[in-house]
Length: 210
Image 1 (cartoon, rainbow, N blue to C red):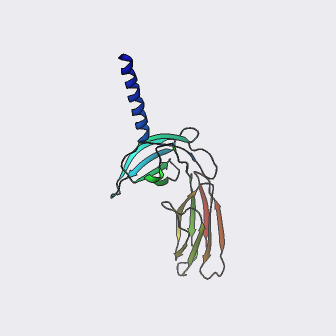
Image 2: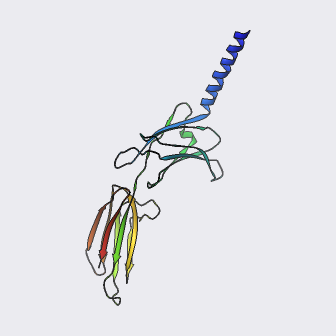
Image 3: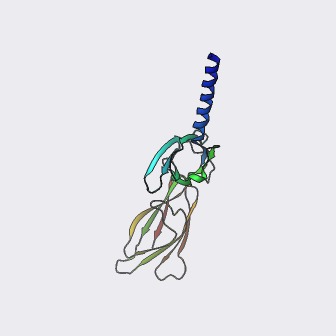
């Protein structure tokens, strides 16, 4: 009788373990800096869910990457339609990835790796030395560089008129190039081309004085 009870308990334990595994989503992955290829340690990896009919996010789990940039986590499978994974670290641009629940599986580990770019900045000095009575104009045409962050410049034309003495900080992915042409009023060809190679976690200065 005791043996039968032990067998039943063992069956129940195995069944409960399998059932628990079936209702959990398991995730693992790696976080790297895209240009250098270096692993990013201590990056925060947070999992949010969104249910049908509302835009309220619910934090389901969080973890951090280890010294090799790897992470593992389990989150409970609940009623939601969309999963959002947000990866962040100080002085890095946050990455956000979205997955419909139909793209996830409980049968095996969901492998999701991420790229986390280090921040860099260009400190742009703009100064007009002409007398104030001149109707001077400076046009800058940005042609490359990061466009999808707070403070980033979209690739477009920018016009500065009249008296000017200012400093502008332009964020960029560290280790990549920020490029733009610039003209002063009346020029038929560009007065200058800036190809500024930005340094991770640092600021590079560039001046336009006209």
